[in-house]
Picture 1: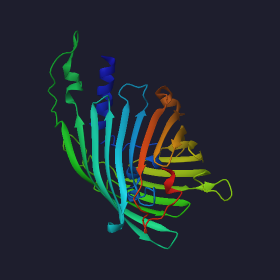
Picture 2 (picture 1 turned 60 degrees about the vertical axis):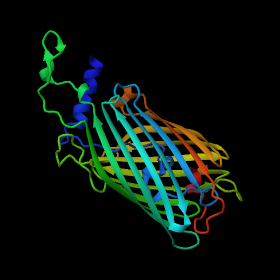
Picture 3 (picture 1 turned 90 degrees about the vertical axis):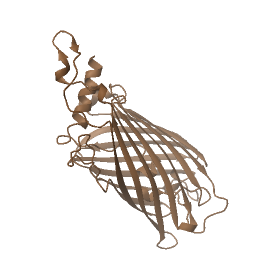
Length: 334
């Protein structure tokens, strides 16, 4: 009973009181391993034979020691095509909160257009059309008018209940600039700010998510590329509604081995060190996988025991090298 009540309270507070709390998009520690979700402009930047494609699976279990944990998974694929001067991508995200009390499904298709600034620097502009469906299991919610003083929650509620699912169109957009050893990008998600209320409240909108991210590939051995042995610092700054997050991390790769550490800062002033981040993984030419753990530092969340995240990617090579797509070490990391 206690666990069920807690799930109901969390669900009501987070999802049925839009004036006091705003919905927020899921975020990944391995943002470099969720390219289409981080920035639509990354569609088509897979680097196998300068023009291949990739498929990526991501799984995140946030604060698993708490009841009603958040579990988020994505599947995506993308590829560059010279004939359309850009890349195409597909992405499906599934987010489960409150052990299925609230679920969100995002499905979208992306196009990115590539522009050559010179022989060394390229830009991409990306746009994603998306459908978001949210489902709420009303049967698992408990209300005060259901309480009997001696028997507990036994009565039927007189609360007005909304629909079990709501569906909204959405638009995301992004910009990316990259060269051999660096990249930088800007993305705006939820451009249309879809309504997320199960009661039809027009003010209960999903806020726009603004993201700035960048990375650099630094070789550590002369006359060898960063793909052989190198360091890869990465940063991401994200703002959505009244919430701000900053990730800073650095990854070391030695041929097939990936290992990295980082930190996450949160709140409006970025004054809270929310987590230490640690990752380890395997990086082959076609198959790649990585595991990361977020060690929570905030004393108010000390019982959460951190979060787990796994990413798996497979790249396929084009039959011949693209004449219009350059191979860059910074984007070849994943």
